Image 1 (cartoon, each protein chain N blue to C red):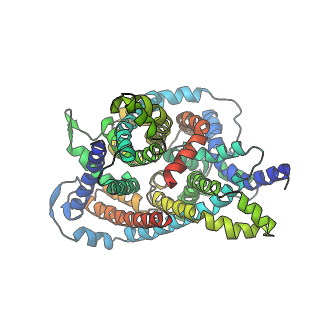
Image 2 (image 1 turned 90 degrees about the vertical axis):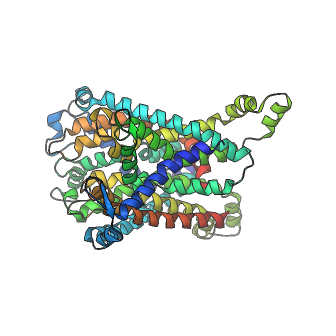
Image 3 (image 1 turned 30 degrees about the vertical axis):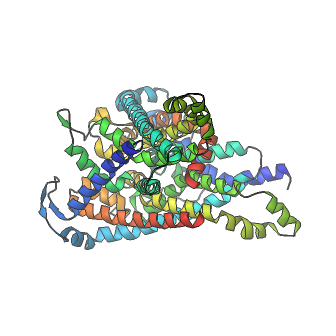
Length: 279
Length: 280
């Protein structure tokens, strides 16, 4: 009885919208959302033939792989350093956790301004250091806009990942390093043969949770590039939003939703399997 | 390795990432304090020639910052209260009472935790627009946003609370029953005081997540008087040709500062709490 309210609320706010999406996906829907009748696989076929969708699907995979990969590669050394006892460690930790406190959408606005071609501080600083000779129009070209999106995705994912990895590192007892040192192990050997294997479960969880977060990440790309220029920074969730509320194509949008849901459910299944195995 | 040497090395290794982390904050502060004409002067400089505090006053009026802040506080507080009111009993039941289907309920929570509102955004909007509320519908109401936030934070809250509740020994409550307290009284006067830290951490995380949320608010809210702070800030920039960057940065700074301060102060507790919830 005590868990009933939570079930009802979750069911209402998750399963009813899900039902609506399935219904839209197989219906002929007007641009104002009026259901005009059953249409079978029409919407699915239309989405499958949509070059922007296919492009966004591939880009979503690239986006997820590069952001999560970059995050882990940066977060691991940071967590290792933060485990050491050094002067100002508390300050260092607080600074590195700061991005967590700023809303993704507002962080994106600030970065957009920092990358402004004429008045942004990034071009100004790069020019000052002599790395570029004239201002770059970062957000105007997909070749630079998408890597900028990825870089910001990495920066905002680091605090959470470092936190999980630090939790993992603190669960490794210090004595085993002592023992290994006495037995003549070199530092890189104890890292490679002890730290990494013992950190594995935490790495797995950090990777899976990040994959799910990053895959669903909407505000950064939406605020910085809105999928543009030329539809060439869209990932599935931004394209789905544009289809739903800007292009007035609810039917295909519902199909894209289902595709994304299917991918998230597979990732969740992998996560559950990992949890079972580690437990 | 000696401590001074280790300290220097550690800071050296961390410094590139620190610089990138601090850059947006530096940009925010520098621009928020620059007078309008200096923001659009070329080449741009870091330090303002004069501190333009009037940006905050101008921004307050043009953005309607007060109203937006009120909306953000109202929505985040109400969503947090609703989520906790539903999650605390559920977590108590999960950790204390024997019941059938506990495993299934856990799986259910895990699955809902993976769903981000963006995946169902179209269905959410249609649902809100289909529920009558007053003389209109739940779409474009703050109540709608509150309910959606509470629902999507529920899984996380139940999960975290129940893993913490499980660490509070049940003997204490049982001792209170023996002393003649009713079950409800034992919960109120023995269990709740001990559970308060966990409830506080869960509440803060839920509050900050709601305070910062963008997608659901963007979808459901339309009327300018009901927009939250992130929406207001994004609207100042999105699709405009001339952007008052000094005012935008002043608004961003003012919206971020309280959360950043709370976060730095409570960081240690949050980190332990989150790792408990995420990993155990």
